[in-house]
Amino acid sequence: MIDGPGVRARLEAAASDVDRIADSMDLAGMTRSRRRGATALRLVGLGALACASLVAVVIGIVVSGPRGSSPPTTTVVPGLSARPVDLAATPEGWTPLDFGDVQVSVPPNWRPKALVFHGPPHLTLSYVAEGSGGDGVTLQAATYPSGHPPYRLEHIHGLAVRIWERFRLAIVPAAGVQIEWSGDGRSVLDTLTWSPQAAALAARTTAPPASSWRRVSFGGVQVAVPESWRVKRILGSCAASFFVNEDAVLLDRDLPLKCLTAPGLPVVVEPRRMGVMVNLLRQDSALGPYKFPTRCVARRTSPAETLCTARAPLADLMLVEVTVHGHKPVLVAIGQFGDGHEVQQIYDSIRPAP
Amino acid sequence: MEGAEKEFERFAREQARSLMRQAYLLTGDAAEAQDLVQETMLRAWRSWPTLSSYEQPGAWCRQVLHRLAVGRWRKLVVRHRHPLAESSATPATDADHLDVVAAVRALRVPERRALVLHDIAGLSVAEIAGEMQAPEGTVRSWLTRARAQVAAQLGISSVTTAEERRS
Image 1 (cartoon, each protein chain N blue to C red):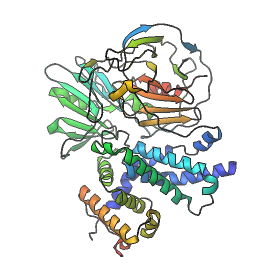
Image 2: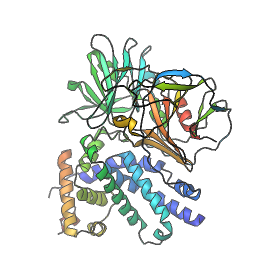
Image 3: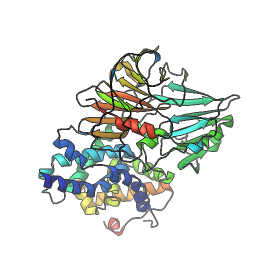
């Protein structure tokens, strides 16, 4: 048999990538959860989304002032210990686009839009931005190019990127995202950095929101937002009618989350939105093929709730499915903005409504 | 009760890294691995009154972990067609590590399990044979094949240990 420096060392090196995840797992927390009668940690399906040629109507919902509330007992977040958004990666005047755990920025005259189309076998969502004269960039879940030819490995703002110049394609393995470009779109790749979602989900201790923040409750879930944000209830409907958004709640600015309409139909989105949308999920056939993959990229658990952050990225939104025991799952969409600090605070504030 | 909890917490801490590494190589997906480890530990805690009296509670956890992993593979067969698209939670920053994980994932289930038990869990061929309820010669053959296949995929030479050569 052959001898040489080999497989075992490579296996151990690759496997050690998850040591930090193992170290961050509060496995002892399940003894506490069990004592309090919590049900098992479980993955809940993330159906998702869409929404809204929105008619927003300001009406009252349960809004309460700031108050103390005990933080969840357990924080379980996979990933690296630090995944900062490099704000300097965005040139002056350029527009950041977020897709899952990564962000790129495009020139000011470029027009961002989201596209949805069928796999097969899975629904695929692309985030596209186009300039003039054929310049453009597309972000979507990663797939290897046919034959997996040699690539060049480059590190851009701390992210390892596999680049196939010939195919005008780059893959960010740590985020599972691929970036394709046309024309002068190559310069967009140089603006790559972690997204606010990645920063918000990096392993850390949960931080309580500022005492001035207001807490809003809906569907059994409470979320805290900056005091200045407006609170609206949305009466929305989608032209494609695969998802009726009648129970959505929108906070702050109108969240320009459009219906994910018929496959292939471009949907214009407005990047850099702030805001939070809380939405009663409908786990029925109406979602049909638009259901996103159901596994979590991050999960937080406490005796009373389970939070699952969506694996399928959506342009500029971080999606969290919240299951408060005894209630239907609720979808919380948090706009990705800034360096992720506020996104993290909003995420950390999610808990069962009192 | 408090004593049992402390004992379990110590046990969980000791096991977490090894189980996580095994789960990661078995599934090729960090999020999936995390699920498996948590589910395994949850079951261990539920069975702790009995499990704590076992000579090797870690072996019990490995068995549960591997059984859970096989159950999930059956449900997720379609994912193999689009491995990276469905593996967005991978923690690796080194692209080579992803190739290693992909190579292990391409192995047949018993070969993959044997390789992970041997190289990651540190079990001997005899111990693997006991856990997998297979003859030692078969385990050696799985290990040799697995190592050769992974080595070929990675473009490196494979190593067969003295123990594996004994047959």
